[in-house]
Structures are given as structure tokens and as C-alpha cells.
Image 1 (cartoon, rainbow, N blue to C red):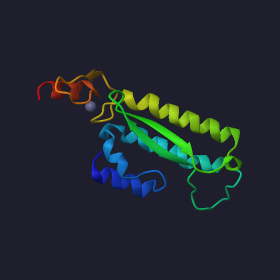
Image 2 (image 1 turned 90 degrees about the vertical axis):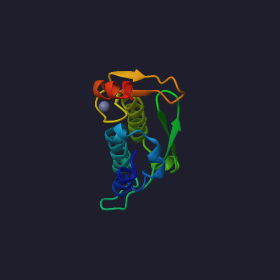
Image 3 (image 1 turned 180 degrees about the vertical axis):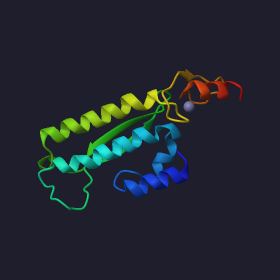
Length: 140
Ligand SMILES: [Zn+2]
């Protein structure tokens, strides 16, 4: 992602966004926003949550780079079990699964649904792309 996009994510979701987002494709902005929104919503379900309280970080977020898909999301809890309910655990699993399912189906450039995966002959990482960006890349 471009620096100004990452800066905006850090401003909006300071508990979970950081400079490591620079490694993710631009087209993943929507799914990253959804993910961070889901992670902030977790605290609303917590037994320690009070209205108007400062946001609390429940998980640490990691992106593991792969050949395909581009990156996979991992999280681990940073608050001990007494802060969690079964519903929160379930919501977290849903949020992580949704991200890992949806992100690879987005065009890595624009975020539209991907049409195909472009494999490069020169060792570059393969990319999921929409029809428009697939055609642009074929000619470059
Ligand atoms: Zn595209």
C-alpha cells in the first residue's frame, strides 16, 4: 500500500495499523478496513468494556507473505482469557477467516473482484488482477 494510505489507516485504527501495511497490495484497502473495524468491535462484547472507555487492543496482527495468496493474516490474543467470551472468540475467528477468504479475490491494484491470477516469468510474485489490470500488465 502507498504511504499516504497507510498513514490514513494508522490515523483511523491506531491499535492495529502500522507501517507493515506498506507490504500489502493497494487493492486490499477495503478488506483491511473491514478487518480493523471488526477488531475494534470486539471490545464492545468484552466483559471489561465500559461505555466511553478508551479502545483496548485484543490481538496482535501479523501478515505472512506468501507466493499465493500475497499475504495471510494471523492474530494472537494479547489479553488473557478472562477478557474474552466465547462470542468474542467466535467473532475473531470469523473476522480472520473473512479477511483470508476475501483478500485473495480482490484485484491487487484496484480492489475490484479479480478475474485471474497473473504469473510472471521473471520471478515476481504472482498477482490477482481484474480484467482491466490483467490486460494492462500483459502489455508491460
Ligand atoms: Zn484492477
